[in-house]
Each structure stands twice: as C-alpha cells, then as structure tokens.
Image (tube, rainbow, N blue to C red; front, side, top):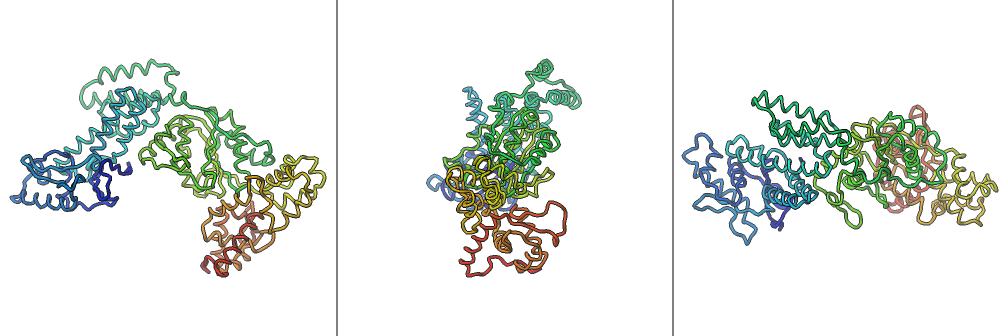
Length: 638
C-alpha cells in the first residue's frame, strides 16, 4: 500500500519527526526523509520504536543487534548508536526535553501519538472498536479503514533478519491482521462486502490457517453473490487443516458453511444491489437533437449488442458528443437493467475534476461508498485529497461492482486518458461510453466513433426546430449560409437558432451576413450564457503551447481552413517529418480533421474547422503583438 499523508496529531509543529514501522523503518522531518545511519544503528532505533514510551533493557537491544555472539565492546557500541540517534532525532516536542533517556530499566524513547504510525494505528483501532460497541458500524468501518491506511506492508520488513526485530514485527503484523478482520466484518455488516473481497483473498493466501480471515472471505464472497466460490473457500480450508494439522474446521466455521448451503437465491443477492439509490441518473434529452443517425445506430448496435465494453466518441467542442451520448443512453434501457449514469469529468469552468471526485460520484450512485466521508469537498467543489488507501479501496470496489452488474456509464468530456484509467471495466457486462475532444489514442482496445461536421441537411433540420420550419422556408438560401458559416458545428447552429428565436425581426439574410464576417462571427454566436467562443477557448487551453502556435500558423493558410502537408511545411518553416508530427498531434487533440479513408500524408487535405480557425487567428494576432512577430515555438527542421 502507498504511504498516506502523515497525520501529525499533537506533534504537528514544524521540525517534528514522524516515524513509521508499518513497512520499512523510516523517519521524516518536515516531509523530508532522514538518514538513519548504518544497519546496526537502525536495529537499535527499530527496537526502541517497537516499545515506545517504555524502558528497553540493554540486553534486549544487544540481542537485537548481535543475536549470536556480541563483541566485548557491545555496550560501548550501543552507546555510540544511541548518541548518534539523539543527535539525529533532536529533542522531544514538549519543551525541548530529551527524547532518549537512560534509566535503571534501560533506554526510554519518548514519543507522541502523532509522531509514530503504530501509536496512531492503535488509537484509531481502539476508537473503531468503541464505535462498534456503541452500534455505530459505519463509524467503526471508517475509523478502522483509516487505521489500515497506515499499513504499508509487513512491518519492518527491511530488518527482519534480526530475530529480535522479527519478533516485534510479527507482533505488529498480528495486530494489523486483527484490525483488518474487524474492518472487513464491519463492511460486510453494512452490505459493502465488495470492498473487502480482494484484500481478504490476498491475506488468506499469506495466512492460510487464520480462520477468522477465511470466515470473513467466505461471507464477503457470499454477500457478493459468489456462492460457489464461498463454498470452495471452506472446502480448501477443510482439506488444508486435515493435511497440515490433522484437524477439522471449528464448529463455528462448519456452521457458517452449512448456513450458506441452505440459503436461497434471495439471501445471496449482494446488499449493495438493494441499496442502489437510483437506477438511472441521466440528463434530460434535448428535443432539438437531430441527425447523427449513422453514429447513433452504431452506438446502439455496439453497446446494445454487448460487442464492446468501452466506446470513445470524439470530436471538437460543440460537435454534439454529449447530446449523442445522452440520447443513446436513454435508448439503451433494456440492455442495461442495473442502471445508466452520466458523469461529467470536467467542472463548469472546463477544468478537469480529480479522479477521486469522479470515483466518489460513481460510488455514491451505485452505493459502494459514503463519498462525503471518504472524499469531502469544499464549497467550491474542489477535492480534499483522500488517503491513497481509501482511494484504492474505492477503485477496487468500483471494479468489483462493474464485474457483477450490467450498467452503462457515460463519462462525459474527458480531458485525457489518465482521467479514466482505473474507471473502465476490466471484466463483466458493464459498458462505458466516453466522450472527448481529443482521440484519446492511449486507450485500447476501444470502439471509436469520430463525429464529423453534420451534413447541411442535418444542420438545417436542427436550425428549423429552433426557429420554426415556416421561417426557415422564407429564405432557404440564407439559412444554408448560416449553417455553413457555423462550419456545421451543432453548438453554433443551436446558438444561432436560439438567438434568431429571440430576434424575430431579424432577417435570416442579415444574420448570415454577420456570420460571414470573420471579425464578427464569434461575437454573434452568443445566446444568454451560452457562448461558442467560451467553448472553443476551453479546448484551446487544453492544447500544449507548441500545438497552439502550430494551429495559429495553419489557421492562416486558407480562408476555408483547408491545407496540404506541403503548405503546412512552408507555413511552419520546418522539415516534412516535423510537419507531419505537428499536424498529427493536432489530429489527436481533435483540432484538425483528416480524410475518413486511407490516403498518404502528401495527398491528404486537412482542415481546421471554420470557427476554431477564426479563434486561432485571433490568438495568433494577439500573440504576434505581444512577441513582436517572432514565432512562439521553433520546430526542428528535420
């Protein structure tokens, strides 16, 4: 397990030292790891930390460092190691008192709860058990999980070749196992067995004769609907006990097995399924949705037929990806009886949401996480970082839930591959529909649908739904000029329709003239709080600085935004290979379109969508004014 954020407790002042035994022996001051000296010095420190705030006899320290034949200078060498440790660790936090003192009982290391992970672990474990005793099972599970998040692996595993340290490490590991059993039983009682299944399996493999772990694993499998696997766990245990010890499982374990044999199908259903708050969480479909018949048919065939688990719909901002995905999700009720959910992966300002925040929303929807506990948020909606352990547990619980259900998840407006890795199903019948401006080439294998500009007829159909078919027929030529000036971009056509629906006096021809003017088109495409320029600017910010400069240069090549590789090479002032890489980088980002069929790079006609072209030219003019005309990025001539 990865290291969680250090909890300082009462020792949170600057300069405090924080020790860890639940994993390799480490010490940190102000976030920096301290050098702990040679191995024998670390053995002394580990022995003292394993018995905090308690006198440790000199003989115990000697046996830990020299278990077989201590030298005549052992006591003097110990004094050297203790002196070096004092200098390294400094005074204790309370008034500068000595941290390491010597008395009649031996050496005494003074340390506060917030300075040592094992002390913090014990405090959280006691609080969790107390909560369980009061009947607060959810509180108990949270506290016990927080304790387990401090556990990085076998305690002191880097020093276990010392018999004395190994004995202390085994004692700590036994405490950790007991707390894990307490936590797993609490989660099972809450109906959240899925979060514990994989961890229990791993621990049983390392501790095959530990019966309480076996029982918890059986219960978690059984509650998750995996009846046959739960019964197989018992059979394996019975055979192991007979082979290794010549014994039978305990009466309690045998009774658990018999009860599982006798329960019906209803009892085997996971409690999580019954606790799912809502089977559908989709935005309302828009009545203005038109066209995209081939793409919609493709989506319904692929997702409805169970051919693919992940589909990526890509296209520039405003191309109608979200509308298409929501439309498909509304039509796919039958193939996904366990629910359909829509989750935006960006906030309203276009910034990416953290993976923990997205995972918490998914957890709330399917009932596997109390996200307000594990992933609290500020009033502005920003993530408060969760412990790495809690995030890992929720991620595994989400994978387990997907493996056991048949649901459709729409992850909308994904900024990059890293935002969705770990969220996509590894097995089972769940499907994920991803929408993104870029191609997300790092995701594989997936079914891909690229949204081109719609045909003129589809764009006119959308405009007619917004302004009325009668008004459209008054000047069909002007209406066609409007949709073509929008570059066929559905968002721009929709904004034009909303604007014309309000400005009923405005002739279509006059509005078409406004959109034909390159210096005014983006200013015209605003309806209330919906702005095409704002949407394009969000996509512009997603581009790397070199891509922005390249796009600005390519946008100036032709009035219609089209260009060839030869023209790109001249405009960028670079060699052919560099130009190909630059253009293909923009294709990956969804900023440049390429031919649908196979064609060589030299023969291809590339295009920057008209409105993006206008925006890029604006940015190029602004940047040129700020840099005195010098190019912002120099491409290699190779």
